[in-house]
Image 1 (cartoon, rainbow, N blue to C red):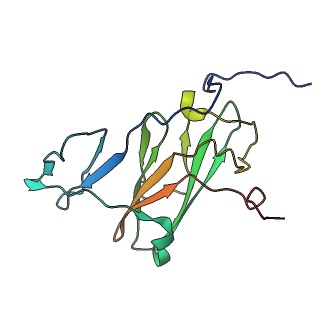
Image 2: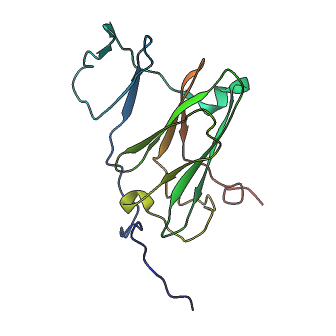
Image 3: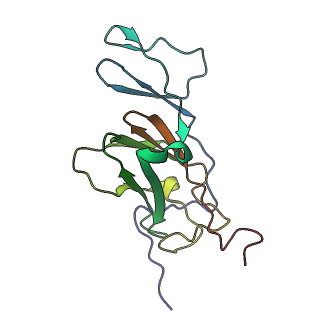
Length: 178
């Protein structure tokens, strides 16, 4: 029998953590391209400006509407000790992926996609964000949905903000599948 070794990044939670991270809203300056991210505001929208112009919030679209711009997908890897989310992208010329943001149970991670960056972009997880029910690598995408509540956001030039919830379920686990 293989001895279970607990890695430093492994979640110690006995059950799936509650989502503690509030919603996230992104703003982008139309003049210089700067990105502003905010979370957890309860009051009215603050005046957020850049280059002397008020920034408007970006309204996300689902990956299904990307069409000819390209594709985004993900895979959860690592099992108990080394959870990570791999985000795969294949963008058509003229529709560059500028950045990715992974919203998790406890916060978020942002990565800028520089010229020549090849797919995938890997977000390593730790503590409560690394919670998993099993040690399968890659994730079996079962009905427990360990990472349900996570969302990947990406900014695609000439399209805007794209959101991709981590809610895939393998056809093997879906009801009615044989």
